[in-house]
Length: 263
Image: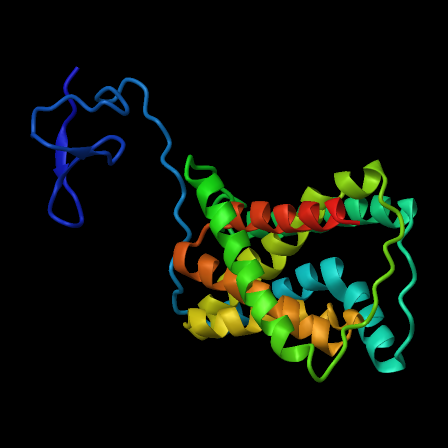
């Protein structure tokens, strides 16, 4: 069966049924077979659009809801440790289990908010491609490069706070990927997309995302928080450039697996 051809937005021929590019007008579409079995295309995150005042207020409420559920307590505890100059306690198996539960709850709330926005996790970049492994390693490499450079410059006049190793059992390893997805889906993909839509600037979105993520890492002390902020910046720039969060989640997980392996 032949596909009917239509003119695409950029002037090329595309399948009128599924939008796949065609070389010739009477060419059979290899994606949907000319209308027999359409294949859904990957959702592409939308560019920032203008908002009405009512829509803008609603987005602020949604941001507050998602960030509140996911990070209110971490922000409070981080500021308490930082301002009170308290010593960090070693993590336990319960802490690792709690992180898994917190991640599941926060991501569920995020998915619910996205659903009412008419979007999905795929729409904010949670998709899978063959090149994800390459980009994962690339992000991790530049993360290590920048954080090492920052550490070398900070170490001379400020000593990072000591973080006790604590529990390193199976639950700690199982919590790595949920914890990475928790942070990156919300602080990176969701928050950056929302800020870009509200401000019309992905540069502002990068700044807000990195700033907020650094805020709840202040429990490590300012030197360490500034060091890890370099890695946050790498991930934020990658997301702003590609609108894809999967390699960022995997790179974050790789970083944490590497850290655990050295304990």
